[in-house]
Amino acid sequence: MSQPEALRSLLESVAAGNVSPTVALDKLKHFTYEPVGEFARIDHHRQLRTGFPEVIWGQGKTPDQIVQIMAAMRQRNPVVMATRIEPDVAEQLEEKVEGLRYYPMAKIAAIAPARIEPQYPGTIGILSAGTADLPVAEEAAITAELSSFRVLRLWDVGVAGIHRLLDNRHVIAEASVLIVVAGMEGALPSVVAGLADCPVIAVPTSVGYGASFSGLAPLLTMLNSCAAGIGVVNIDNGFGAAILAGQILRTAGKLQ
Image (cartoon, rainbow, N blue to C red; front, side):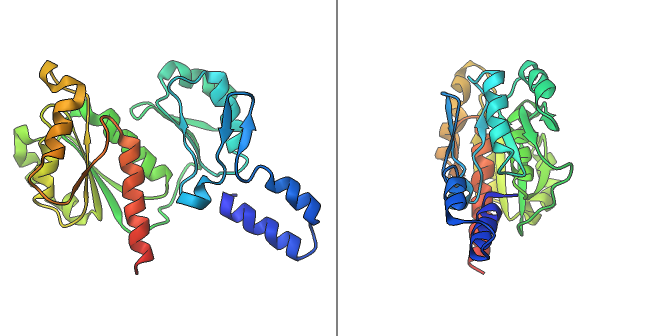
């Protein structure tokens, strides 16, 4: 049961007299946040505030810490997601977390239904310039799918072979919002924005030779794009791009 549904159910139970105010007060203690050991405070209220539940940043956490956080979060959310999970950590998590699914390309570990149907209108199109950009692009794609959005993927369509992009313009045309992932010089978002009638979220990656400065060069290219309608997230931040795309689609739904 999701956080809003759990809160509504509790309030209805109080109104019906099935749950006393004292018991309800005890249950509400952890509706805002819940301590986990001495190392975490889970923000259960985040989905009510923002529309998306808290997601675990896996890098820097021990496997045991991630296991404990997931155990607490799965009591309140149908989907629990952890990002930046290396394969060796995933193996340890799979031994201790029932029903865990691991997406190796995206480095995401999640407790989720086998199939998640899109709950929101619109489509998030995700393009990658090169195969080396796929880990970041897949992080965006899996995040969006786990958040109940429809995703269209188009990989390896960088500007070094622009005909590959032009041959697949239907993906651009079908998308309600686009995430464009590129390293090296980072030119692809500018080209896509010149063809698209929807918002473009540019994601620079740390892929490239020395003068790309681990993603700084494509970041600056994207920030300096002459094409209008581009927003830029941080280097390698596929997760942030997916959440931003989701917020755009959810906000569009409010305006209808």
